[in-house]
Length: 143
Length: 126
Image (cartoon, rainbow over all chains, first blue to last red; front, side):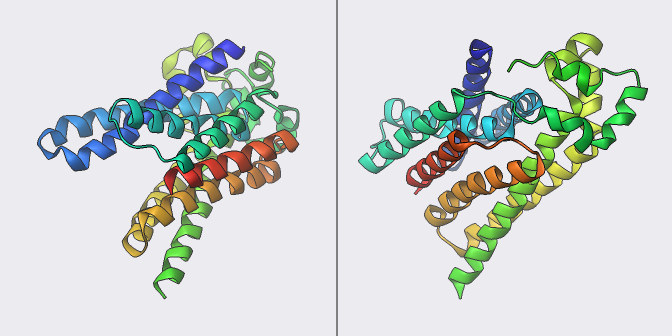
């Protein structure tokens, strides 16, 4: 479960990083504006899809700190690929984010599903379509 | 006066993105584990369930509001104030909102994580 979490979070972060740094490049390299924008949109969609995917099996308060790893990756990319100066204050920021993600990764990914049957009445209509119900689905959720 | 405009826009961004995140998270909990749904009924079924979900639609709308208020805020204030302030306040707001509206058990571990990440984002983006 942790391997799967780590994997999807990492691809998550990578995709977010890609799309943020592309926004940088957009402004700078006007000549290649169009291809970059297209790639940026694809990456943005990919990030959104994996974000939605993570939200389908984990808490919001678990997924959000994990996505913030994207900021850390962005800073590292800026340092090593673009050779930007990363100030000590930013290193402190990187350390804080990493620490926060470490904190939340040590806990359970999903804490809320016990409440959901009563809290989300719209669910009842899904069961009629013959689609898997929340009970069926969440019983397979890694904890 | 400009500062007041900037901060109200920041508050609108934070509010809209918290609402958006909560609605999207709720939508995806209603859809269920995407891997499971995909395995049982195929990718198309996943897409139909996600796009057809009312909370998903509202969540995307809220995200759009957040994006356009970000544009407004950037026209009034410095990016070095707006971006970190909005991002870190969104983290804190989300922790509160997830506890209240999604009934997530935001324990001490997650509070510390939310505060650390909010602080880190503020430092990085600042």
